[in-house]
Length: 103
Image 1 (tube, rainbow, N blue to C red):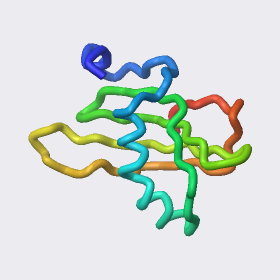
Image 2: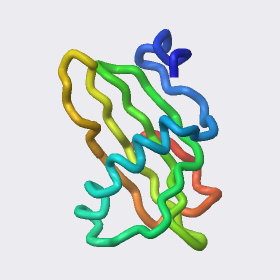
Image 3: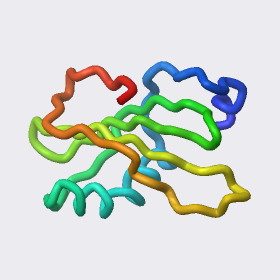
Image 4: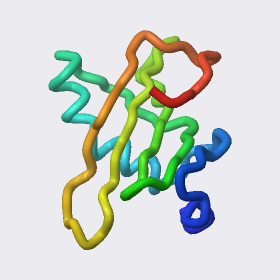
């Protein structure tokens, strides 16, 4: 995600999720399951938007099976802070066509 480093404060347009974004989603999946009290058998990152702040915020649309999607907000702190990825927000009951926007 090298290209986002020059966009401090700006939100990128939606982009296809690759392995790095899937890793972000997979890493915070247990946090989401704890908050929603659900177990997600499928957890496939589809698209994402990112914003550079004092770290990186990623909004990720995740397919959780059937016609169900969730939107998650993941915060990656600055490297020198050595903090784990954090689920800082989520929206459930989303569809494939719901726009991925900041929350």
